Length: 256
Ligand code: GLP
Image (cartoon, rainbow, N blue to C red; front, side):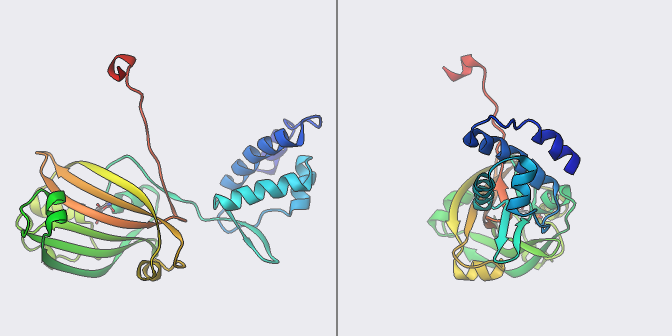
């Protein structure tokens, strides 16, 4: 890696204005940080300034920028460290378990409770069932390698999934269970992502300070016949997640 930086540094000619050097340095530092293990220390500002041939102020500004974007974090008197990577919540319709497996992490859950309730108008509309219908509610803290990632509340029409509440969802995937026990093929979902801050209860469950930014993600999932099978509302830690969208441009004719 040092070799790689040095090669790239040679693209920062001395005559470049400091502002343009800042932009170039940003790119270099970001790829440098991306290759370091989370938790490892960055060289000091002075060392980085010397190495990249820029003013110390330029380095400081770029580090501040990265700290703001939570790519690195600072510890008073100790230096700057590489932050944990964020896990992307992608456009693929995956279960939490599949999502974590794809990243080489072990998905887990801590049960907060399973119960049955009567759907109020809002919930009934989302599940496309009559108001007052019985709904199974599963509340879990989802973990990756034992670290809490999200607080998740899933609602499913109870009539379609009898006995769901007796299943052990701390150790198994809900989507796997739906496929195996209820023969459900999950086909599509609409997700809504909004930004929120952690309230005390969720902050505690996520082992994160209260008031920290978080994603609120709602998912309405349908089976192959277009029937709604779940409405899930989750709070994902903002420091460990990002939402990645893959946008494809339609042919010009379709846009008009
Ligand atoms: C994600 C979705 C939920 C879904 C869950 C199933 O977290 N946001 O809507 O219920 O995956 O995950 P698993 O099959 O791992 O229990």
